[in-house]
Amino acid sequence: MTKKIKYTDEPMQTGEIVKDFLPRPEDLVFRKERVLTLRLDEPTLDELKEAADSKGLGMSTLVRMWVKEKLANSVSTQAQ
Image 1 (cartoon, helix red, strand yellow):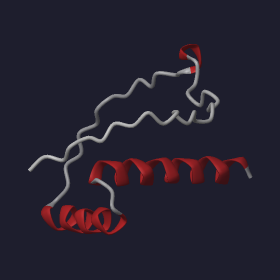
Image 2 (cartoon, helix red, strand yellow):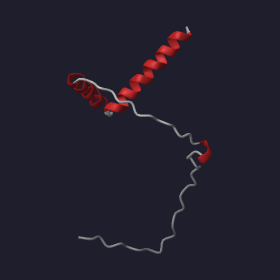
Image 3 (cartoon, one colour):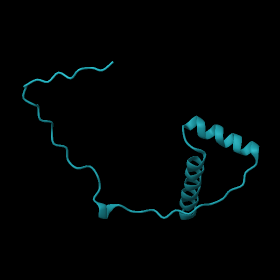
Image 4 (cartoon, helix red, strand yellow):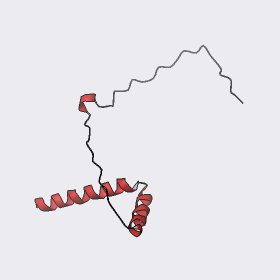
């Protein structure tokens, strides 16, 4: 079941020119990440999985966000 293409001699409409929205290669910053192994018990992992699923995130992503939040809060608390 294939559709046949209908060709016409109509003039093509030109689209609008879009300004380049990608950063220049020299503006890209490569993050150097390292792996951290973390051991958690099953009930904690189950809770973590539920929390991550409820937010539509992976467990690692959620833990990384929480760590960054905690560090940002501790830095701002120490600055006061």
